[in-house]
Length: 263
Image 1 (cartoon, rainbow, N blue to C red):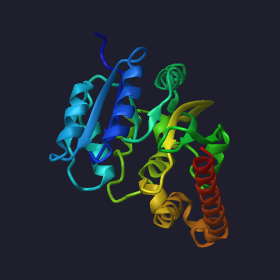
Image 2: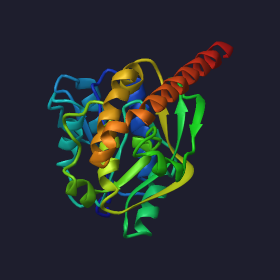
Image 3: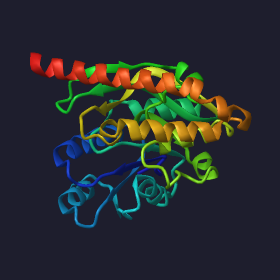
């Protein structure tokens, strides 16, 4: 068996067993093309989830109960031979060949620190309700607009991620945005519009159910990455972005509800 090249981190509370099984299967499919170390972070009491993860060949790490950022950092500490990092939620999916596609882009560009692709938004039944194909536009919007780089559809060079100190444990919602903004100083971002992942959109998703809190945290993170002279004027674009993001979220919810009723 070749040394693992991609460290896949999967945090779970163990309360979504059916979707976790689907997520683990999507990871298993990636192994046909990429050598993976899968690390599942789960509470000590999540017996069924831990057994499911172990059966899928995962390294199981105890959830430190200090927030999702610290949970991911504990997973990163399990690094051995891996060069790249990828993340997946316990109700999200990698599309077939997704990790291979991202890895090939980073392999081809030694100066690139992050690769990302398109992302399908799916409902809990797996039906596609929207597609994000932002491409290079996502990089232009990142410092001041919405974050259109999907965490489950991105791959980061581990040396670069370690150089920025991993994920900020004080952040609850937008630790990925903060990392992306920090990584810009270390190298290029490369992208494809091809869908490499699927994000499950449903009311109890952390960033969906806490939309306003997530937005406010994102605004604070983006402000601290701006040059200091721009801090006082940042509300000039943050407020319109907040409104546009909320509007887009409402439309996506309405579309998902309509599709469910039609089925």
